[in-house]
Image (cartoon, rainbow, N blue to C red; front, side, top):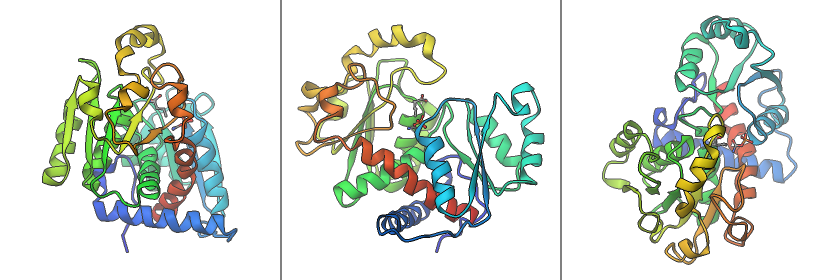
Length: 309
Ligand code: CP
Ligand code: NVA
């Protein structure tokens, strides 16, 4: 039994392989209960605050529905409406909210802001996406890979596209679980060197990590092919320039000839058909993007039970 009660969830780097395995097992059980119509409410009376400084469909809805199904309540706090948006210090906000809530999920720009919130809060803080990381997504992704492939063992994930929050968290998740990870992007858009170093240190001999500008090299013999938008939230002004730069990194039928024949296609969503992936592929029979999106609900319910229970 993992000791996760009261912990923050800011990056997968903070969690051991055993703790992640425990969360994945709990997510599986919680999903089974839901499918069997079993009522499971270990968080009765608990309230999760959800601070959003960026848009969201999946993260907001899966956390709000998840805490409700667990017997608690979610409180949506747009940063436009709370005083944080008018300059109230993060540390004061953390201390005030700790007096009311049982947990905070935050989606914002700087990872440092999330860390500051967590340092000053006496309740668990969950990272619902920053510019640097998106650990909740990767928890659901690992659950999905396990469902589809039967196990995480010997799986190679190829992430083709921008070296962003998704690339970083996937790479750390793969390294933690002893999976192989390769990624390709144009020079200047590869993952952050410090995160790559961290992942390599975590993965050691059990996880092979490849960083390249060649998409064919990266996708070679991949079991899982993953991509994400070329311009993330906050980079809207770079959209046009990035479309040109990333054109040869599109995940399409031609590139996928180099992956394993039984490859699985994944995407955190939202997706841009015709940009990072063709409609044929994301809507094709190797794609599990909606199973992956649903698993956000189950994986985050497990996370809330473990941290807030
Ligand atoms: N994948 C994901 O986090 O989606 P949202 O931006 O809709 O929350
Ligand atoms: N990289 C994307 C992920 C969205 C879920 C972004 O940050 O906008």
